[in-house]
Amino acid sequence: MDKPRLLLAAPASGSGKTMLTCGLLQALTLRGLKVASFKCGPDYIDPMFHEKVIGTKSGNLDLFFADADLLRRLFARNCAGTDIAVIEGVMGYYDGMQAASAEGSSYAVARALECPTVLIVNARGQSVSALATLEGFARFRADSGVRGVIFNQMPERIFLELKPRVEAMGIVPLGYVPRAEEMVIESRHLGLVTPDEVRDLSERLKRLAALLEQTIDMDALLALAQSAPALAVPPEPDYPALSAAKIAVARDEAFCFYYRDNLALLERLGATLQFFSPIHDSALPAGAQGLVLYGGYPELYARPLSENAPMRDCIRAAIDGGMPCLAECGGFMYLHEEMEDMEGKSWPMAGVIAGKTYRTNKLGRFGYITLSAGADTAYLPAGETVRAHEFHYFDSENCGAAFTATKPDGKRSWQCIHAEGGLLAGYPHLFYESNPMLIVRFLRKCAGKEEA
Image 1 (tube, one colour):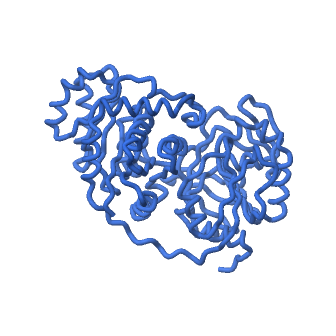
Image 2 (cartoon, rainbow, N blue to C red):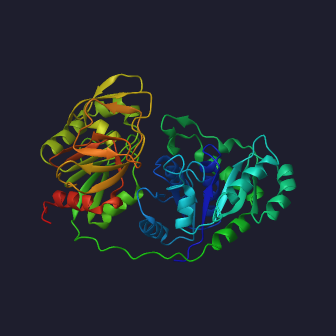
Image 3 (spheres, rainbow, N blue to C red):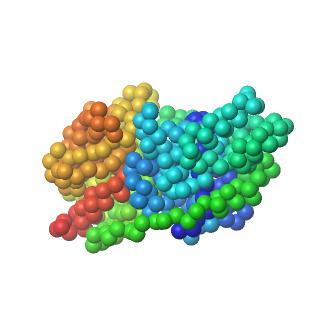
């Protein structure tokens, strides 16, 4: 596979990676290029900003969810038909799943994809000290892959003085970004607001792209991307026989967190996806044989979700009647009898799961986990695992106990997940490709073909 590609990394979170990535995506798109974009790690919101720019879905690249072979296959699938791939890193470049390890880091993704890295150095309040940061990251590992640099919040005068010093390191000084209003996005309790909530985002990104065309050497950036070597991509595995089924998938302002590759696997295995809104629609799509409720911000829309009684009744009747259902995080919260909103007021919900969810004001059970079933369940038999991630400020009086969640270092575990009949519901966000058979079984149950 011969695909021009770049990974945009930084020494730490808060360096401007997301908005600079979006600005570069906008600039490349305005140049007429078809761009594939990706985010390292399990994040949902940054890819939503990418999608706003390029008009197609952005993917995740995560070495906890996927080994190197699967990572390359996912990358290749999502790059098909594009001219260039741009990958946004996560946290600091070398920060991995554990404090003293680079395993699962942006650096590890760059190495797995043989991808040149551009380091974004936030140089506010710095001049020559920014060079020390750059040299430290470039030399920290012999195979760091750091090939270029962009200095964020740096005046042109300082950049021009530092440029020869960067070149002497063997690193391409791609340019600088002066402090710009377009680079600032409001924070919220799950990290960032969604792109639809940022006023004049499209115009701001176009202004940012115009600025970057003046301060970034776009031709040098493209040349760096084109220097990436051909990537060996393992062949696709043989998937089980397709199980055609119509799957209703909740997608609206309350339920907007999902992995592109999860939806793609459902379709690859034969599902027809029917999107609907638990806020705005009064019933599930006609002919639906299964239901998927992903995460999002239901706590911000508790009132309209609660006031849509016909939809709540429809979903409860469907699940009580045996419709297979996968629900995670926000979708799991919606299935409870009650859900607190951001002000602590409780609202009636679907009533499938006893008890209520409530705000805690702190992250609960945050991070990567491996899920295993204590006994055979409809979609995950004892002895099999699926990988997942948790990130939520709300908790439940009734988290379930069908699965055991274990942290990557094996030092902490807890019980979670409801797995009764065709229902699989809990806080963890599953990554389906880590165990496709879970989805095969789900779709077979939806289609009424549960035989092996």
